[in-house]
Length: 153
Image (tube, rainbow, N blue to C red; front, side, top):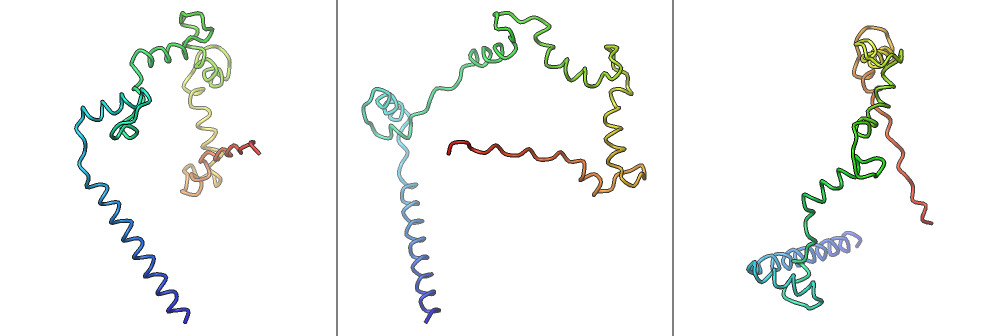
């Protein structure tokens, strides 16, 4: 009896899926309105009027190149005085440079530049063979950062 009920339920689900597929295909077969009609509908939508396809055609304007440049300028202008000096451009790089400059002389030698990489390689080479196996290399992958939990409750 359970087999018959399950078979009838599956047949009903298949019929419903076919019906929804058929309805979605019917909506896709409708003719696309000409471009000027969509623009008129979008302008009517912006004025609070309803028009043919107004909601589907409405899109916010694209960001202009000037606003992109202004945003980039604002990121670089650290002290927000409306001018960018060389120190403002180099500040984010100074911290990374200071981490690599182990002797603090203001210059990076090749050994300082590669020092951390060599130390990480030596740490990952658990069997001290001078090469990394696939398991040793997999252990060098950065740990995933924990996802922030929502504090909204």
